[in-house]
Each structure stands twice: as structure tokens, then as C-alpha cells.
Length: 177
Image 1 (cartoon, rainbow, N blue to C red):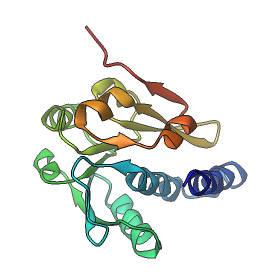
Image 2 (image 1 turned 45 degrees about the vertical axis):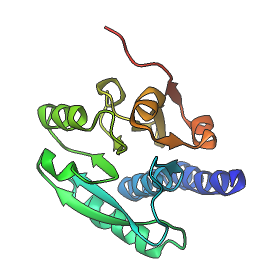
Image 3 (image 1 turned 60 degrees about the horizontal axis):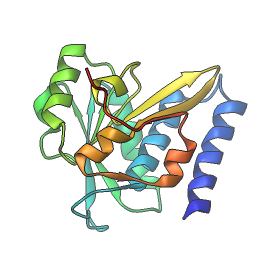
């Protein structure tokens, strides 16, 4: 499994570094997103024959990209992707991607999902500090990510140790006021 993870992320990293200007960043983010789905374990296992229910906030193109990645992948589980504009869409989902969403909607949705087994991912700066689980980050033409392990633990989700090793940063304890 470790070799599979390495190969998938190595391919993504090579693509992002060698074709950084020409590569579609949304496609790269979609590939990362899909791998986070694949290497996350939910407390109540998702039947491999079923689809992981994903909602994407304010990024219709990204919704289409995720669905295409899922359809073309030979790996399970597949994703059922729904674009959305209101926080209520996150109910009964297993994963949520926050793109161009207002701070108020994002905070409300994160607070309502806190402690539930829903994987939360965003490409917005400061997402981990708000309680999100995975923050995708662009720097010097490369795409990377940071993990809020405290949020994973609180939700009952488990992220592969291999993914944690590849993260640029891992927050292990919840922020305390």
C-alpha cells in the first residue's frame, strides 16, 4: 500500500513541478482530493461497491473534474459528486470540498460538521485553523498539503500514516484559546 501511495503522489508531484505553468491546477487538486478519499478510513466502513458522497462548495468546474477522476479511476471507492452553494448540502455527506465560499458559510458548515465523520478539504488559506482537516497549498509552482490531525481524531476518521508523512505540516493538537 505504501508503494501505491508513493507512486500516486510522486506522479502528481512530478506533474506539478515539470508542467506547473501549463498544468491545470484544478486537476491536480482533484487528484489529491481523490487520494485523500482513498486513504481515509471512516468509523463505519464504506462499502466498496458504493460511492463516497462528496459535496463541493462554489466550484462547479471542480465538481465535474472530481466526477471525471472518479469515473476514470480503477480504484474504489468511486465518488458521487454534488455541487452546492448552501451549508445544508453537507448533511449526510462523507466528504466536503470548500473552494470559493464565504467565511461565514465555511465557519457555519465546519461548526455543524465538527465531531462528525466527514472529511473536510479546502484550498483556502487558514482552513486548518478553522477546524478543517486538509488544506491544499500552492507555493512556488508546486501543490502541497497540510493536515489537521486533531480534527481527524475528533471526527473519528483515520488518515493513513503514509499521507501524514507526505504532508508539509501536521497539526497534532487542537488549538486552545
